[in-house]
Image 1 (cartoon, helix red, strand yellow):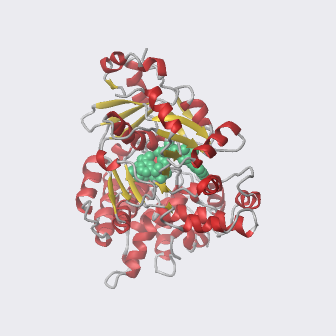
Image 2 (cartoon, rainbow, N blue to C red; image 1 turned 90 degrees about the horizontal axis):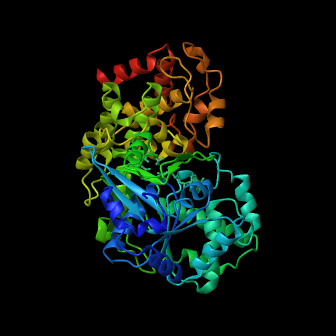
Image 3 (cartoon, rainbow, N blue to C red; image 1 turned 135 degrees about the vertical axis):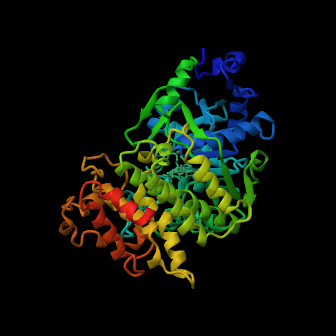
Length: 540
Ligand SMILES: NC(=O)c1ccc[n+]([C@@H]2O[C@H](COP(=O)([O-])OP(=O)(O)OC[C@H]3O[C@@H](n4cnc5c(N)ncnc54)[C@H](O)[C@@H]3O)[C@@H](O)[C@H]2O)c1
Ligand SMILES: O=P(O)(O)OC[C@@H](O)[C@@H](O)[C@H](O)[C@H](O)CO
C-alpha cells in the first residue's frame, strides 16, 4: 500500500512502480545511527525544510556521503508533529513540479525523529537536551519565518512572553523559540562546551546575525538575572566554538495544493490530507515545490560541516553569502513576490502564474526587479543577478504547475517590508548618483500593501487578509479610511510610514512618505482605482 509507514518501505517495487523514488538506505538503521551520534537538528518542521533541506540530506544518504539523518524539532506549532509527522512515521513525499508538468516524486526518509521543543512535552524536551550534549552535533538549522527571531515589537519593546523567559532562565518553562534554543545551547556548554553551528535558513537579511543577536540577548538577560554564569556568553561569542553562519536559501515552496493532492490520490498514494493548523501552517505529509533551488552557506562550521556542497549547495565566505542574499531577498525575487502578492489579492488573483498574464502585474514585477532593483545589486560572482532575475521572471513565476498563491506570500508582510523594500531604498539613499525620492515602483508596492490592509479589493468587495502578527495593530491604525473618501485618510498613514523599524527608514525623511500617501489616495478614489493607478504609473 502506498502509505507512509516504515513497514511499507520494505516493498520498494510498489513505490518505483508508482513513479515514486524510494530511499536507497535502510531507514531503521539510519534512525539508530542518528540517535547514537546526531549531527543535525532542524527547527521549523514546515514545508521548505522537507522540500529542500531534508531532500538534500536524502541525496547524500543515497550515495553514502553521510551516515546520519536530520532530527526535526518544532518549537511553535506542535500540531505539525501530531497531525503530519506522527501519522506518517516521520516520512514525507516530496513532489517537484517542472515547467513541463512533470511531477518528480521522492519518498523522503532522511528525517529520523520529530520532537516538540517545549518543556511541556517532557520526553521530547529531555531528548533534545541529550542531543545537544552530544559531541557529534554539527549543525542546528532553522526555517522558522522572520517572526521566529523577533524578541521585541515594532516599538522596540520586548514582548511580555519574552520578558517571562528572561526571568525564567534555562530551567524554566520557556515560551519563545530563541529562549528555548539558548537553553539547549546552555546544556551543550555545561556538557563540555562542545563546538557547533547555529544556521538560520530564513529569508531575513543577515540571517546569521539576526539569530546570533537573539540568542546572545537571551543569554545576556540570563546573566544579568544571575541565572547562568557569565562564561556562557564567552562560549556563544567565540566563533571557534559556536558559529552563526549566514545563508541564502531559494526554492519556491507553496503550501500543499489540492490539485497535487488529487494527482497523488489518482496514483493510490494515501497520505494526502491537507491540514491548516490553528497557528496557520498549511501542511500535509506531501510537499510540493518548484525544481530550481539555490542554497549558499557561509563556510563556518566549528564542528565540521555536512557535505551539502556535494549535492548542489555552495559553501563560501560571508561577504559572498551577503551579496547573494541581498540579491535574492532585497531585489531580485522576494520584493517581486511581495509586490505581486498584495496587488494580486487586490485584483482578485489566486495564482501566481496567472498573475504573470496580467499586464499591470507583470509590469510591476519587471519594473521593481529590472528597473529599480537591479541597478543597486552587487554581482556576488557565484550567481549572476541578471540571469537570476531572468529565470525568476521568465521561468519560475510563470510556471503554471507551481500551485503558488498571492495569499500565501502576503502572510507576515509587516515582518518583510523593511527587508524587501527598505534595503533598496537605503541603497538609493546612500548612492551618490541616485535619489530615493525618484523611485516609483518600490513606493507603489508599499502603497499597495497599505491599500491591501483595508481588506477590500479593487471591486469594493471585502477580502480576507493573510495572517500577520501585526494585523490587528495595523488595521486599527487604518480604521475609518473609506473607499471613495480621500479625506478619510487624514494623518492615518503617517505613523506607519515614519516607523523606521517597520519600513527600515523614516520614509518622510527620504522624500517618499508623501509620495506613498499620494499613491494610496489615488488607489482609494473609486472602484477600479488600484488597476488604474498601476496603469498610470507602470504602462505610460
Ligand atoms: N516556502 C518557501 O518558498 C521558502 C523559500 C525560501 C525560504 N523560506 C524560508 O522558510 C520559512 C518557512 O517557510 P515554510 O515554507 O517552511 O513555511 P511553513 O508555513 O510550512 O512553516 C513555517 C515554520 O515556521 C515555524 N514558525 C512560524 N512562526 C514561528 C514563530 N513565531 N516561532 C517559531 N517558529 C515559527 C512554524 O512552526 C513552521 O515550522 C519562510 O518564512 C522563509 O523565511 C521559505
Ligand atoms: O517565505 P516568506 O514568508 O519569507 O516569503 C514568501 C515567499 O516570497 C517566499 O517563500 C519565496 O517563495 C521564497 O523566498 C523563494 O525562495
